[in-house]
Image (cartoon, rainbow, N blue to C red; front, side):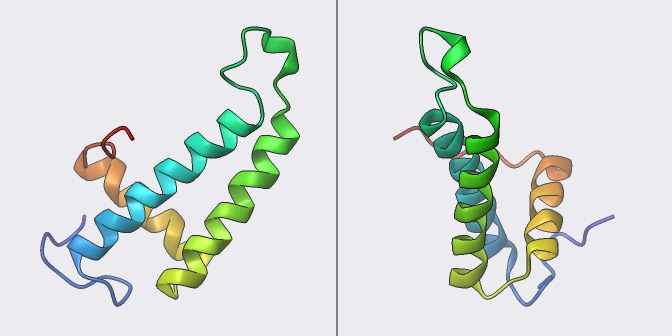
Length: 89
């Protein structure tokens, strides 16, 4: 479905992998800040997680000059190609 070395969305595969990493990190950061890793799961705020994730994704889109839809395409491409998760910090 995806051409391995083709520039898609005006980004090389290497750039798309970086965006993919940032998207994964954005989701993880939003979940952490919303309390997903709290000892008391009742403290998790799903709405907050969603708002934060959208905020972080918007920042990524602005940085790489892509649309939200293109970010979704990159996330799907990464999942379909089995790109590894970003290294833990």
